[in-house]
Image 1: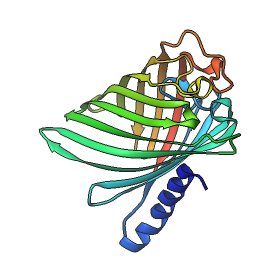
Image 2 (image 1 turned 180 degrees about the vertical axis):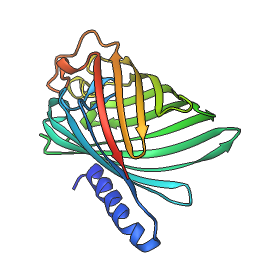
Image 3 (image 1 turned 60 degrees about the vertical axis):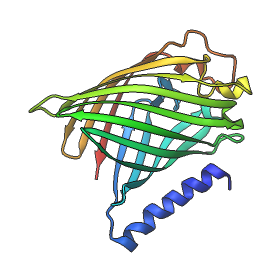
Amino acid sequence: MRYAETLAAAALLVLIAWPAAAQVSLGGSVEVATDERRRGISWSEGKAAPAASLSLQLPSGFDIGARVTGLRGSPRSGGADAVVDASIGYGGDLGLGFRGEGFVVAHAFTGARGRMDYLEGGLGLTYQLGPAQIGADARYAPAQSAIGGDNLYVAARAQLGLPATPYTFAASIGRSSGAVDDPLRAARLRPGGNYSDWLVGVRRVTGPVSLGLDYSGTSIDRVMASPYADARNSGDRLTARASFSF
């Protein structure tokens, strides 16, 4: 079993076993989206993608999570059927409205041709004032053959809940960069080389049900010649999603 799959399996085992031993409740959700888009590019070849997630919040500030998303045989991940994103993180209040977090995520791909799994770590900082929230994130994947080098992603985000309504508006902007060891594999995460992405969206949350609509885009204007680049699904797109949380 490969390293990312090992971490993913370990996280799933902890999620299942810990509540029984420590009487801690799990949270989770099921979701379907018209496209699985990350950092402005499609991971599901522009097709509808189902997903399910579990998370465990521990009193110490640590959290463990796992999310399974259908990829519909996307060429970006070697024809993978699904990806398991397993994460371990730590977060806490820093005072004056600030909250910080750090995490490690293993991305394990099922049904992929060749080695597609990779690891990344990240830091996040969030400031909240009433219904408004702003934040910044940085994610770094060290050099790995599955992604053709290393990858750094930095982003800023904001959201605003409209008082006395179920609506929340969100926006983000990010930048992907990194060194290239294998141009074909590097096109998985950066199909046009270093690029910027953005998103604006709205959410309607009523109880456990959330409905969302996002418009995302990128600065990519020319896609590399690579079997992993998925050129048709690297541009602007309107995405709808619905989820149920428990």
